[in-house]
Every structure is written in structure tokens, then in C-alpha cells.
Length: 137
Image 1: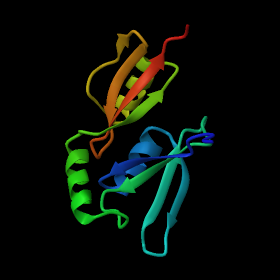
Image 2: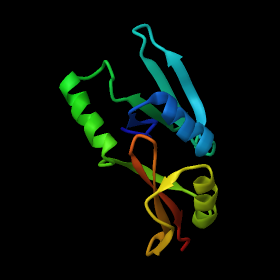
Image 3: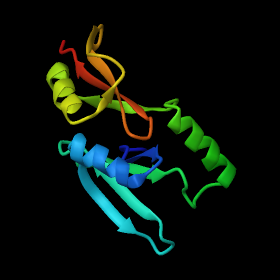
Image 4: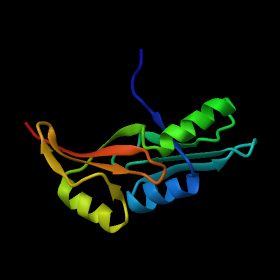
């Protein structure tokens, strides 16, 4: 029986740039930053309020996959073709302004939707995320 999701992977073009985006701009915590025996960097981050979740910032030149597949993945990530998830916030408009001031790229301003207030942001690799303030019922 599955009990919970502990890790999710986001492919990034550059781990240093991803570190800056997720930690310094979004304010996520570093959970693991370690070099493995093969030189691979295992880098995970996560929201302070969700300590059981680790987001793996996986480089698109991972030694764990076929070179052709990684090249195709780099191309898709770089084009912004891959959505990576939803981050919740208690105040979408305020968070939007704060992150925009830090240089986070958005595809538009927050808009009211049937499920709450949402805007779409992008990391430096091109991955996009919904930043959502859910409606309370």
C-alpha cells in the first residue's frame, strides 16, 4: 500500500541556477546537497511547511539516462513545454509582487479562477508552475 509521495523530480538545465531560483527566490529549504561517488550532485529542496516532501532538481545531463533522451528532454524543458506543478500560497497577489520584485518571471498577472487566484511562473530552465491561492469553501 502506498502511504505518501516523498520525492518529485524537476529537470533543470543548470543546478546552480535552479538552486538560486528555488532557494533564494522562492524561499524553499535545501534538504540534500551532496556529491555522489560518480560526481553526480543530488540536490533536493522543499517548502518549509512540508518537510516530508523533497523536490529533486535533476540535471538534464543526468548520467542515469540515455544521451538522446536527455537531449530531447533539454530541448523540451528549454522551450517551456513542461509544467512542473502547483505551489500554494495564502495570498497570490502579494506573493506575485514579492517574487516579481526578486526577478521571478511570470506569464501574466494573477487571475481569479473557479478554484482560486492563480498566476503562472517559470524557473530559469523554462519549467512552469501554477502559483495558486485556493478558494476556501
